[in-house]
Length: 281
Image 1 (cartoon, helix red, strand yellow):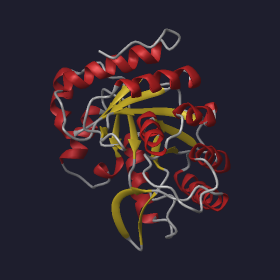
Image 2: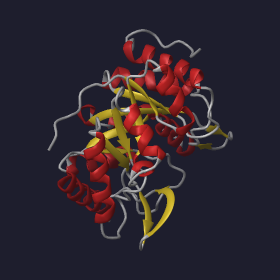
Image 3: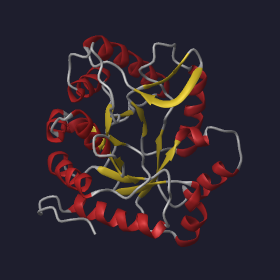
Image 4: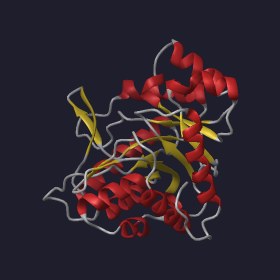
């Protein structure tokens, strides 16, 4: 198995809106993250641009269809195609979500939650170990944004995430915005979440925007990062130290220069966590 990835700096999600501009202007981004499934194909423009961009930037791979918590058998065809992309890209690391996305060969294209209990820990950890054996590397699992609770849960979410990481011996991708969203929706202190996650397991942060409807918050990735999430990211860096981090934006795409401004804030906070937090912008 591969050792823990080194700190890689501060990145952006690689989205089609910016392919040409990235190649034309070579913005000061330390690395890009791709959605793995968008490139698990045999050819076409996505792979063409990925090959060109990776000549200049390291790439991290982030999946949305591993369905690691499903009760369906592991999809070894999916894993074979994922491994083909890994060999092509030589990524910084490979990540996916701590969730299930489908059953009986039907993909819901959504990130679905599971109960937080010992049975789920054993089930997910066993599947993660199998995936890591197939891929020959440790993977990162990302915490979800949460909107429901299960009656059969007898653990806090952060206890569950930590238990899976330990049992499976995998890394974690800590989505700071998801922690904030879940804390708002369920009424817990986000610092309890951060303090419950083992420092030595966290390899990457996601920082993103959301939609706030007052009584509830939805992780939409279609707006700028809010000040409470910047504050929480600052607290995360204080706890976990310098961790590779990126701005995640998937809809209502702004000009690249706006994302570069957010990236500058991300970098400033990440490099100066000992200083008091000041309002973004």
